[in-house]
Image (cartoon, rainbow, N blue to C red; front, side, top):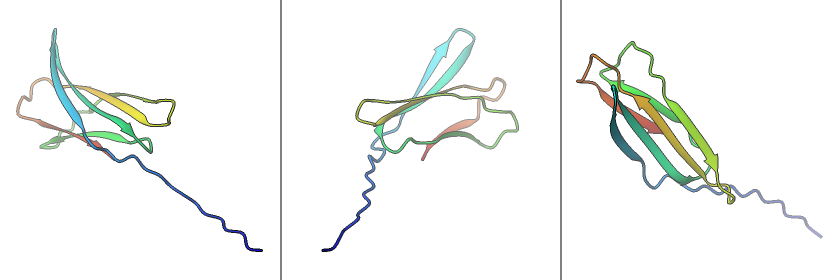
Length: 91
């Protein structure tokens, strides 16, 4: 009699990344979001060109009852440098 042990790893890859800009009173905010992914993703923000100012995103993540994750990350645009390009990375 033989015993077979198998490990299975299932991933739900990122199919789409959504980025939107909101103009609120006094500032602009970027929102980067992904839905229905597994495993839990990591979200990071960068600028081009790089800046020495600290980026302070607020990232929220939750899993639904099937274990798939939804992530929303929000970042206020830095004042005084309108030429910056903002990059949201999800991995």
